[in-house]
Image (cartoon, rainbow, N blue to C red; front, side, top):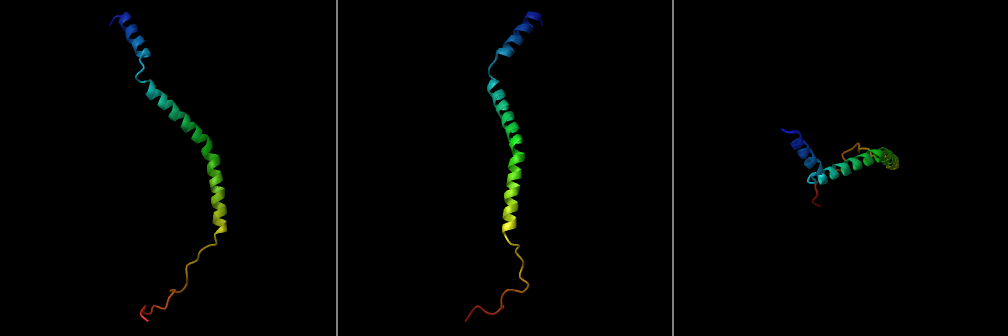
Length: 76
């Protein structure tokens, strides 16, 4: 392949626009991933604190020690 033909193909490759939108979406997805990574740690700490408060506010449920009923007939 001649050198001028290689340069022509390189020039066409760099000036093509058909893959630009895919690259733009990839950049946006990468930026969203970075933002989520930056905010996940503080948010998870806050959620954990709220759940700990809820857990402390709800008394521990215990299973009944007896059957809870007489086992008799439901007909009067």
